[in-house]
Image: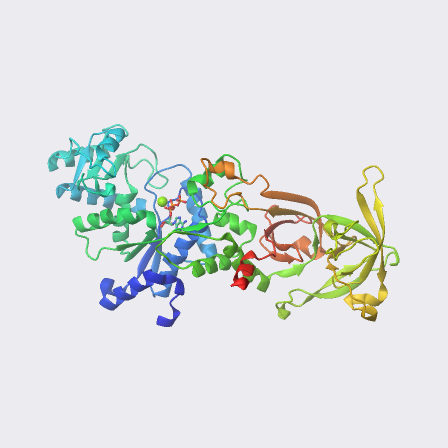
Length: 559
Ligand code: ATP
Ligand code: MG
């Protein structure tokens, strides 16, 4: 087994190795991924998923999917379904171990009764504001609640009546009795239960008291026999309470909480709350807008699950927070797509070209490779005829020195077809806009062969007018202008107003008219593209996944 261990396991893998060596947990590794169903998963969650599922897999263990649904809210069902879909898409499987913290509400209640009986929890009548005030600060100890010394009998009675709905929302809470002077504020008698008359997506109106996350989480782990409870660094200061709770209840072989650094990416927001704001206030089209860093957004954009897993493998598991360059994710994506995306020609901003000396009505077919990186991908036919379209910016009337594409009197190679020379520029007399070019072709250059050893510097792509299919292409830029989207006082101010550009009159090779939603291609010289669900028969819509220019590769080449 040893050799298969993923490199990314880092210090967590070391802990697991030690635990196996000492026989802790009988050598078992059992993890869980515990999303709160209050939004869609984002790229940060992908890291947690790769660690939770990946380390279980690498150690012959199991990983549960557990929804931490202790905080009832309306749209949870939609979120639950999306989260399941996203985890499967990433390539992980929880088998028959799909759980909900709400499955344990009865047992959590019983554990709370047990805490009260042990004199370790009490019902407190302070208001939320008073609790905050009594809690103290980082520099000042807290003060004991006046209700702290209620008898066990009184606490049992009040807690039962809380459950039975005798008191108003917020009137009372159940708190752990630990230490109001603890230097760790989390340990200053944290709240375990609150009264909340909100129907729950699974338990309906059964409960009007709900456990807090801090209380429910360690016990849910214990109930499921979790061994290593992996989470992000912000839970570090909650660990003493995690341990206190399991210890106080004398849970045998208590699970061990281990924290790792969150994934942060440049130009990328990884906060569900803020992402929800973008959706709710219409800054994006939805959770799956291709500009969103949600897994559903990345999927729609055309990202491959392999590229996301590769990113997680490369960044590994560390204890220190850092910000990863978005360029690294894009690099992983390009490496993956370069191997498997079939190449096509697509003209995004078409300029009409008439080949004056090419016979009217004639059509020729040229063989061209589908993927130069992969000969097994075979070849396809490209059509050539008298009227073609080229990219508008592949022509310049008055080109600078280093421009090697088409210009008056200049010759270029059309990919896999002929050499053409620009003879004439036709303009709209009213606007002066260039509307078409008149060119001639050299019949001896068929298939891109070089006649008389003549050198031509530029090769451009094209489509045949009578064969091409119209398509819509959506180009994306980062959703945020600042490397840190949270910079300044309001993240909305950092939104990039030009994050989406829609081109509606693109022309693509005819085979692309039947592209299936989710199919990915390389459009020569433009980047990688993915067919969007907005496509209709005969009218494909493509998202640009990523351009071809790899800034990360350049950085690595320099080293
Ligand atoms: P957010 O801060 O976006 O609301 P969250 O932590 O509230 O995220 P949860 O549903 O509670 O979201 O997260 C499920 C798991 O994913 C937790 O174990 C959490 O630690 C982990 N996680 C969340 N964000 C990241 C991130 N950026 N990098 C790595 N793991 C993360
Ligand atoms: Mg959370």
